[in-house]
Length: 255
View 1 (cartoon, rainbow, N blue to C red):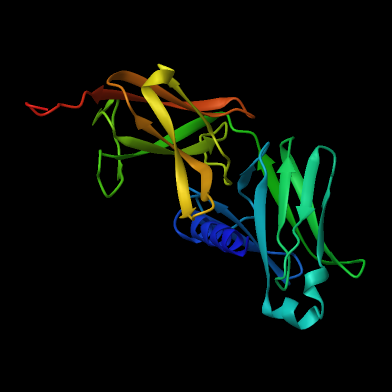
View 2 (view 1 turned 45 degrees about the horizontal axis):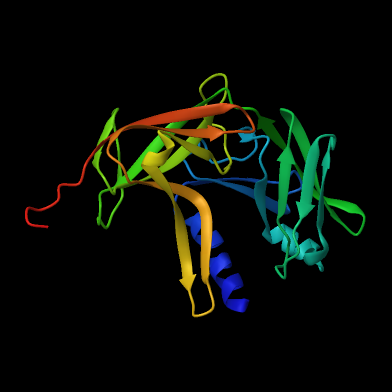
């Protein structure tokens, strides 16, 4: 169990720091820095003033500023609350860290005030803006059979050999075409559905079991032909489509 927890923690750190983008802003009282990770680049570095993806759970990381460290003798007791609270789920995590991060799910677009409470008083606060996407952009990464690296695929259809792998970065866009920050797990479907299989990320292999993560999603092409993959935000009703032209494997003569 401890090994599983360690591997999961390492995966979360890798996802949060490996690539993508992090938007951060300090609270109104200058005591807490609030941050949100996205798997894609977001214009500007400030969390305040950008739109955050609604309908999906977003993790807001928090850390004390130097002023906050001086003002909080028990930062592990800070709780985060939101207003308005209708249609919002917010949870402060259980953690041994000095200050606990929180997750938030917002259903309706708009501005929401996050108050970080300590000993019954507002320790710091920040106003975050949530929005619903109007469309989706899509970045497609592919790996040739037995290849060691992924490359970004451009054009349509994308020509690959049978046995290749594809992975995707869905980017939600607002009505003006601006990127909406935050992450979500897309729903991937194929047409025809029998031409691909879904990959699973292996994190650890042991005598007793295999520890895996089902996200981020990827697919393997197991049949030749023209294949369309739809990557959808099922909650908000937007999607992107990647088309592929898969060539059959050539079996060497004599085999």
